[in-house]
Image (cartoon, rainbow, N blue to C red):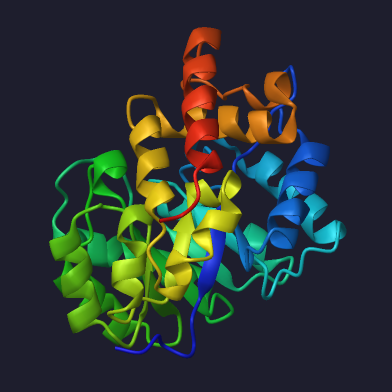
Length: 298
């Protein structure tokens, strides 16, 4: 199958740097975002899982978005705002923070505190949030990451939401790592932008109609991600992921950003309750990833 023409492309799940007091380090955030775009990412997805979005308050989200837009990041085309909240009111407030700056694109996670709510209750929750955001939120990407939220989005629920909100629901990010689920989304919701969270599945999915990716690896290897987002396998990606798997992904990703930027101390800082990698863990990870990156693609 030829690649779809209206592709979403490569969006970096932007990591969030913190200052010593654990406030968002706005200068580093802006610099990392601008460099990610210069390195080939088509957009920045902020406040997602890799960006520790569930640990970020509304006021600091507003400041971060203002800093990015103020630095010249185009809100209509270069920003996707992550929404992570269990209450409808908080989810709407997070979304409106983006809308106020002209951003129509959102990565909308399900409510994650109460487990096993069922499709009917989830439909009611999403309905309330989408109605609260109104039509200006014209590019909503539903976020399926059950290993983190413990609340999955069924293929059937996605279909109901797509039908109920055709002017808003435009895509799904599948971060489950479950190929059967990805394949079902590609078959049953080909009219949506199906985005792949597991970088190892991206090339295969692109050749079956996927639209792109929002991924953490683009923080540290945006050059390697260019191949799979164009449907071409890059074997070093799976090798790098194998090195990340033993660690908490977000902490490992941020450590590698610091290694890449030669700014390790600042980038190692995590927001509680997540913890930073130990120095010995970093040394092992850096050596392994550097060796993989030095290999030529087969």
